[in-house]
Every structure is written in C-alpha cells, then in structure tokens.
Amino acid sequence: MEFNEYQRAARETSQLGFGGPHSAVAPMLGLASETGAILNVYKKYLRDGIDLVANRESLREELGDLLWYVAAVATACNLDLEEIAVANLRRTRDRYPRQHEPQSDELPAFDAGYPRHEQFPRRVVVAFAERPLPSGRASTVRTLVSAEPNAFPEGPFSLEGGKLAGFQVGTEFGDLLTDNSRRVDAYRFHDAIHMGFMAVLGWSPTMRALLGIKRRSAPETDECEDGARAIFAEEGLAAVLSRLATRRTAFLSETSVDGEVIEVAKAAAMDLEVETLPAWLWRRAVCQGFRAMHQLGDNGGGYLVADLDGRALSYHKVLA
Image (cartoon, rainbow, N blue to C red):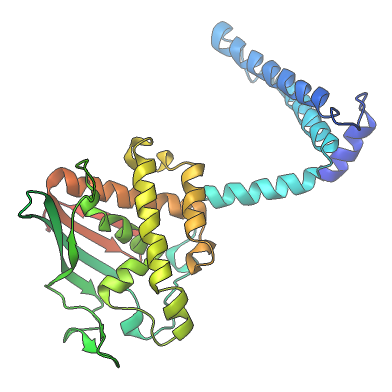
C-alpha cells in the first residue's frame, strides 16, 4: 500500500471534523495519546518484565493507531503523506550515512580534471609549533612537512603579475596566529579546522590560498570558489563554529555536531561547490578538525596528517 493510498483510506474512517483553523488539534491530541500508549507497553516491559515478542500484537495495534493519527494530522494540514515520507528519507540520508557509506571515489572531487599543480595533494603533513611573542602571548607557526604527490619539487613558481603559485616542502607558511581573544584557548591552532575541511570535504579555499594552489586555469572558479569571498566564508564559519563548540563539548564527538550546527555550515557554504555534500560528511569534518585543534592546544603543537583519499584528519604528537 502506498502512503497516499493509506492517507485517503484513513480519512474515510475518520470521525474527526476536517476544516477550520483548529482542525488539526484533535488528531494532534490523538498523536500524543497513542505515543503515550506505546510508552506504556514499554513501561510494562521495564517494570513487569512482560515478553515484548508475546505482546507484538498490542504493539502493532498501537503503532497502527499512531500511523493513523499521523495521516490525520497531515490531512488536516493539507499535506501529502507520500511527500512527507520521501522528504524525510531524503533528509535522514543527508544527515546520517547509510549502513554502507559511499566510497571516497563516489563523492565529488572538486579539483578533479584541473592541472596537477591546481589540485590538493592527496596526503599533507603539517607541523604546528608555538612561538612566544614579545607581548607574552602565544602564537603558532606551521611548517609543511610533506605533500604527496608534490607538484612543486622545485618550489613555487612565478605567475604573470608577480604572484607565486605553489609551495615549498620543509618551510613555514602562513602568518603567525594567536587566539585573537582575551580568553586563552586553542584558536591559534584553528588551521586544524581548515585542514579538517580539506581532508574530509576535499574543500578549503583557505588551504588553497596557503598552499598556492588556486585554480587559476578556470577564471570563474578562481574568482567564485577560490577567491576572497569564499575564503571569508570559510574563515567566518570557523569562527562561528568555535563559539558554538563551547556549548557542545567542543565538538569532540560527531554526535555533538547537531542539526543547528549543520545548518550554520550549510548557510556558509551556500552557492559554493561544497554545498552539494551531505550533512553527515560535514559533521565528520567539523568533529575531526576541532578534535585536532584541541589536541594541538593540549600538547602545545604536534603534527596533523590530512588523508584526502581516506577523507580523514589525524593528530600525531610525534611522527613515526
């Protein structure tokens, strides 16, 4: 039986009045009542030790009544139950990976097809270390330990206009970073968040700029995906997430990256290539980036390994 067929049949058996501003009240009360009835069955299981298998008929009946009231609420609100079910599955598949989640090569690689020197290396190792400033504040420096494959064995090369493209393995890159706050936290290591995006999502305009691998061969991509606005969006997202993290156990587990956080991330990614990625992958990227940032903060530095093929970011106190 199809959902819309069930909804029509359920309406034919309804004694509820449909129509008017309060037509949904009665079926909503029915929903609450039937939910309580299902909980009552489980309460008897916990309290009295009833056999749930032997009481399957009772549970089936209560669940059926619950479904009937769901259909009644949908009808009262002029909603199609079939459309609700389809949209719900689409939403849950976006938020939670299936039992067999897609392989890395089934997810989009945003720089596939571009020249090698405009692609992210598939494995990037960065060393983070603290360096005190004359003010006494702690800052961090980053050193590119390795990048494989390395499209720049001779180091960066010059472009028209005097700009440089590429990176030099074994050298520091980027500016000194502090916490930029009166409160001392690990935000001076927040490039870990960008590395989490790069490793798990295959996306980070900030890391592209730091590594000098903007996709200049495609002017529109260079401007719209790798340009200043995209970089500001990512930097702003990292800053907002750091505020949200204080109320969510620092995003140290994927379960702490809730729906509100995902909506913030997706809003920042709107109209960018990364907006097509599922919410569950965003959840993983946020968690791995923040976990790495706090590990760097707890240990005063260390090494981050970005595995873009495995879509994973890992922290190492020392390299093996």
